[in-house]
Image 1 (cartoon, rainbow, N blue to C red):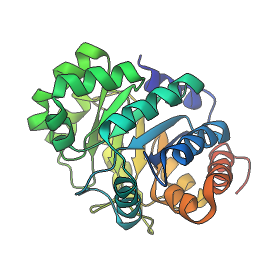
Image 2 (image 1 turned 135 degrees about the horizontal axis):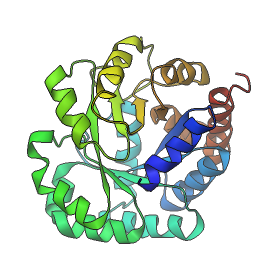
Image 3 (image 1 turned 90 degrees about the vertical axis):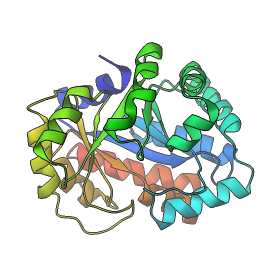
Image 4 (image 1 turned 30 degrees about the vertical axis):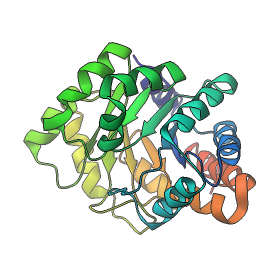
Amino acid sequence: MTKITAALNKQKENGSKGLIVYLTAGYPDYETAFRAVLAASEAGADAIEIGMPFSDPLADGPIIQKAAAAALKGGATTAKTRSFIERIRRYSPIPLAVMTYINTVLQYGSEEFVRDFSAAGIEGLIIPDLPIEESGSVEPVCRKYGLDLIKFVAPTSTEDRIASIGRQAAGFLYCISVAGVTGVRDVDYSAIGEVVQQARRYSNIPAAIGFGIGSPQAACRAAQHADAVIVGSAVIERLMTGGVDAVREFVETIRQALDGRGI
């Protein structure tokens, strides 16, 4: 069992739900992002998804795009993000997954990227524009270095596709609640809930629902259909408007809600 899977399963064993928090590397700068990661961890996140700033982030909504653009303008690079992860690992054991796009990985070199970021301290790799049919250039390398290559399912996924992805899934199954990009919105989570039920016929790793979760109430509604939730845009928005303290407070409220300690 991998570190990410173990962390999410621990919440399940405790009768609660897992919480994965997304933060953008280098936004608004690396120092503040570092403090935000530690704050989210201390506030109850079970894992951190670190977004690597990219110039054409196809899966990201306007808030995360804005953060990525600001990070790049401030000098964020792949090398600096690797050092950022090394620094986090010196201070926190929380499981870390990097979210990036395939061009970044290929430009760096698939094996070199996985090797270097694994050595830096990540446990998972999320590449939203890498379909399962083309994952052969990355997946064997991830297995070699012990990284979970996170797979996606969505309400539009067919039964055959869910089966294929479920059999290959590692770490956790990333369940996209709605078609489109990231961002806070009202979502009916029953559709992705049906996909989760199908996926569980092929895989017993934790299922985590992401996209659209903007409040403790929404987190609880999504968690009814899965083992964990992923909160990104709403966290970045708090960082933009209120800084690290706002991130800490928001993550704490979601943790309390998922644990049944009130909303």
